Length: 122
Image (cartoon, rainbow, N blue to C red; front, side, top):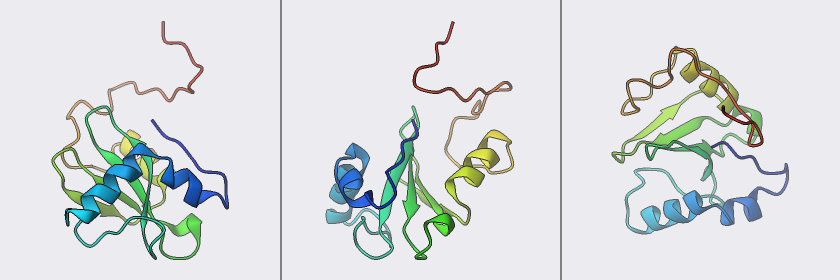
């Protein structure tokens, strides 16, 4: 599921995210590599997660949010940084030009669909 903060309201949005609470716990245990949680400079903010346990973050550096790279924590606890924004990352994953090691081999399917929360699947 992908979720987004209101511009300028990143801090309260991040503090309310379950994935960001988990990131804080991992950081306190020393299990985040060189990554730090937001609001630390360059800190990570979660914006999506997969059904298989992968979590997708923005790395809040550089200062321009349009240039924030994507960082993935895979379900087997590997950290991978991609030098693209969220939209380019998702387009690359769905277009199979970006490979995220550890994600299921059948993802995406041969006929992926992007649905809104209110869309019905029949």
